[in-house]
Image 1 (cartoon, rainbow, N blue to C red):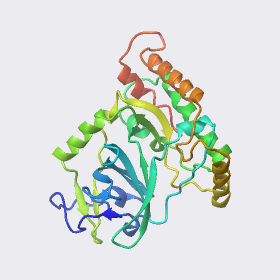
Image 2 (cartoon, rainbow, N blue to C red):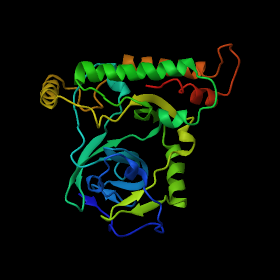
Image 3 (tube, one colour):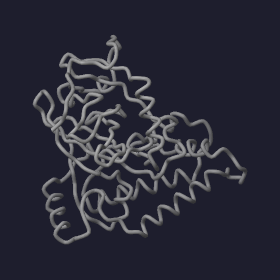
Length: 301
């Protein structure tokens, strides 16, 4: 169930701004996208506050979670898209995949169903960072990002039997520590309403907006995201998930159990990267923020 806004209403003055956001994508079809509106309340819980991004298979929104009383990212898939795989594992690669907190389905005014995923908000993706790079690469940070991505892929290939066919900088995210930066982000959305346009079907397309400074200073861990285009052996995966659920009492979901040793190892790596990113190869002190951003330039896949 969703409290859906009037499709003819607008939150800002309508202007002719040409193709916007997902309209610019190849093979774009308006009817496949759910008509999310700022101000909507999804499944009586998630209030839509602004648009974070878009892609061929979904749009992403910053929402306020009325039950948890914090901010979440809700990814709304296009019609006939979205897979949820639930399984328990000791493979630490799961720790490097974006974890689903919850999923649900909603129906738009066109009558089409759309699958939705709820995540903890991320700070940014690596592609956004490389656009701002102006300096030398930091080897420690590059190794950290690559190692995390390889661990995620190992889990997908060896246990989930999923091939991620779209590993690129846009799909590697930096998770976010705390929500203070999100408070400022939401306030900026309220003070400066994003551009928008209304399509012939009545769906409103909003312009997405990045976090201020891409959440720099609150980055946590690199995680691989967006399996929307990944082929999956559905029947085998479902059977494997059922077996895991029967054999384990520790819980399920993409947020399943990961060993404390794996978490501790990542914390050590993170600390090492943070230390390494404050020094040049010659040991001279440099600006940490500049080093962190610069270190991501070499991660081109």
